[in-house]
Image 1: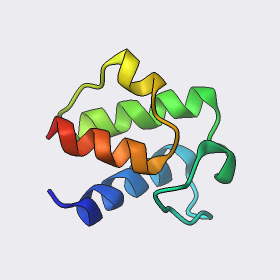
Image 2: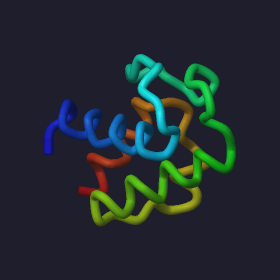
Image 3: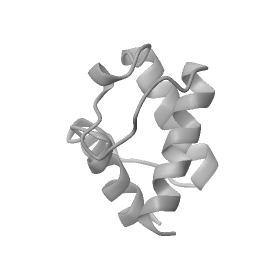
Image 4: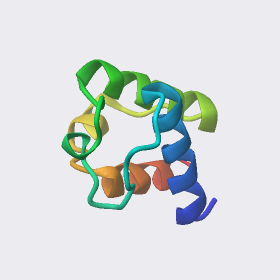
Length: 79
């Protein structure tokens, strides 16, 4: 799966959990940039991504993520 396909999966997870599309998704996007992306929804987004892609993140990896670019890189390494 290439980077663009992963971005689409991440965006789809965000839309599903947050129930809106009012955001621009770039590698530098953080939770602070997206309305409704808070601590509880963050875990729901991660769970949605894990479920959709059949992967499981390690806790330390999750703690080291700073933005969507980090998330996409982590997904690439898990696939």
